[in-house]
Image (cartoon, rainbow, N blue to C red; front, side, top):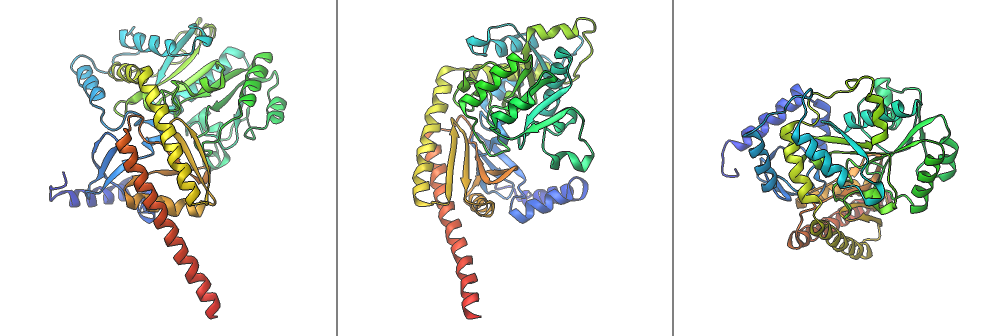
Length: 433
């Protein structure tokens, strides 16, 4: 790819078309941050801009690339699928959907039992909408509680669980939704009365900056929801499928939710597919009319064949042990850097789900800029911009991890030097005046 003389022209045309026909303001924002990347070659933890610059993906699109880019087993699964099937038809029974559903139910911890059902979508927002519909239908209640600063998607009901900045520009606030402060058990218990259908929460809120709930908080919420007939929905769209070193992140809390939503990683980075896993007794809402919810592309047969391979890889105990081992390695490396750079205030880590907390948002932005220059792609948490989201693919090897942290160390040094120069110039200007 790098030797192709047409790449520069293709890249330039792609940016121009994106700006002119798709998203002018987004392209402008990317250009200011030096992030106007046009992806070219990609494989494993790496991808290249069409200019030829190589990057290591340390965001993984929020978990879409849990298995890296173009994992060979996932590619073969899709090639095999396309030689046999297409998306299928949601009106028909499907062996592929049935098998994937079995694997998802059996992936739940033993404490959950096996009396669960599965339904599919093609995006995270769609599957969160379905989970909220299920909760309302099963309980006969309307009210939904969510965590302030959390994020569950940009579609109808999912959007209503998020913060005002996502809703207000589109006049999308709906009655029956209430946000409560992160980690405030008194506020939670005040809100969770017998008018509530469900509380929805991310096992680890990524957009809020990878903040971790106290174990006692989650267990108390679970106890309180059972007491009041409220359903507990855990959003595992980013944290599921092994990201934290256990297959489901909620396993760290020793609880079993009533509803689990998952996606991103289920796609293998190849074919969009999302799922909601819900208690079997809730299925009675479909008894009178089994067609009150359908999704034309949800559970595509080709997509299911890809996701079956994802499940086989991700649920392997050796794979999960590798995630935990690499998570510990990265944590120790970041701790060492924190001793050198005290403006790294906190390292939030569970497996390969990490949030690096800087002293202020501006610092995080400068560090991200230097990471991009060094060839590391990462982003900040949108609801706490002083937190750098750090999510390398779960397939990362020890030599690759060494390479990543060497580049991170260089980027931190350059960011520190750059900011010190700015401070020196500011102070010099004041003294001269």
